[in-house]
Image (tube, rainbow, N blue to C red; front, side, top):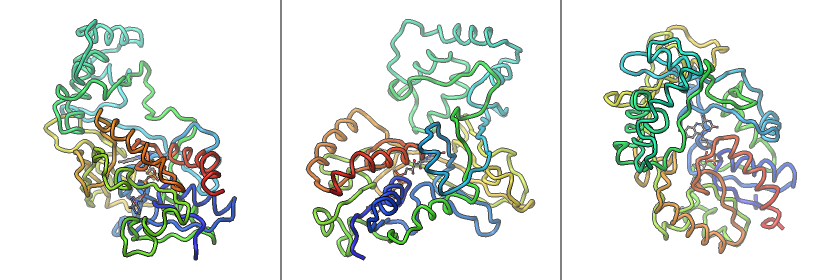
Length: 383
Ligand code: FDA
């Protein structure tokens, strides 16, 4: 087919654009992706020996308070009533997260009321009152006091960044969540759940339209492919959701990212940790958390003598690693501004999504941003 629009990247941003353009405008849309599967980082697959759905690029929990996004996504999937909760192992003891009254009372072996707990945290945070912390460590102490910061955040942050928090800028955090109730629901959004038939079924339904062709294993920068940057830009409108620095061949420098390494294991027990996500806050445990996927879908019939776990390790990304979270240093922000200037000269190309804008986006944000790009930006490009 000769496409009316080329979409680079089959993640939620790209598929939302493709679906809207095909269904609403009747355009022929060619979606290319360098990976061998659809869906970007939200892709999931059944672990072959157990059938347990595994999120290949890290746990994905859907949540939103945006009615328009919820109305849109529920055209393609129903959702379970899963509510995300996280626990953290600290010095051999398990606590509920985010820090709440239950965590505080367990940690201090106390029965504080909300008011007493608030007063205690205020007092402990007072250690650095009146100072202007330059590093993350001091900022953490100033926000929630030394005991809670050192137990729950210090080691965890050091592992996330592979850097002593004393050497990280205070600007990385503006607040650390503490709740003075026993509510340990992780998200506060109006809508939350997991796609009943899994992420890949949802993503495939978005692409299931006669006007949409998805071509996998196709890198936009591979000149040997018929659809590539040199052949397409200026000829056919393009929505590009790959890394913005890569598009310009890193002319303004490489933007920095953190990546994750995942270690997946099938264990011959029916239940390894009793919960989907367990954080490990101590610095001497090398991983940051363990996911146990069966617990995301308690409603499914999974085997009772096997389970799938995934240990997660965090580090700075090198070229070739999966870029997961923007580091966003001052140098990155300056380079991004220069890249944004360059995008203005790329007529007929729209940059979007997590990689195309160098911004961490939750799924609902990527979808919401694609819907508004479809409304407000694409009409100019498509004519
Ligand atoms: P996404 O990265 O999904 O897709 C971009 C696609 O472009 C990829 O498939 C890539 O292969 C392709 N591409 C790049 N360069 C290319 C090239 N040169 N040629 C062809 N194709 C190319 N959100 C949430 O709501 N709840 C959650 O729990 C989580 N959890 C989570 C965990 C981790 C570890 C991460 C990193 C992210 C999350 N997210 C999340 C965020 C979620 O993954 C994110 O919102 C979506 O992936 C964004 O979709 P995009 O389409 O923008 O990018």
